[in-house]
Amino acid sequence: MKTLGQIAYEAYCGVRQWKSFDGKPLPRWREMAIEIQAAWDVAGCAVAFRNGEKLGTDQGTEAPRPQSETLPYVLKFAERMEAKLEKNRHKGGRENWLGHHPYSLLARLKQEVAELEEALGNQSFDNITDEAADVANFAMMIADQAQQALNRYSQQP
Image (cartoon, rainbow, N blue to C red; front, side):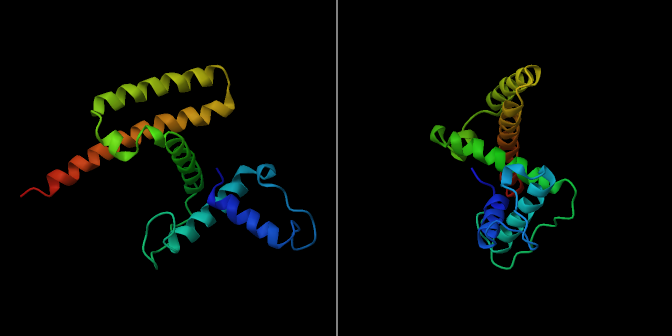
């Protein structure tokens, strides 16, 4: 799945016929340094956020502040998390995880940690990021349940 940054970069390259301002060839997405990809990802997310697209915001909402040195990496990882959730959407989305007991989600998180540890031990670098996203997704599901509980209790008189 392409990130917003990759979509923007490739659209730019297409308009420029894959040539830079001085006529040199522009690299393909996978050939660029991770820092450059991350910068494009921040720009793509900022445009989507500003225009209320994909992120479900209203028009005119202030864009995220890309001056954070860690934000590009957080956004890139969040896109990996979402890709993993999308791949497993057939198992049920948010309503499904809200219906599980938090300790059942914690047990799954621990299973994913074991899979991450195995991937690290095998130096299976392409698998490490996927397993890390699985761990993060189960942690997010638990956090989402906690936030739901906080919202319910804060609305009680």
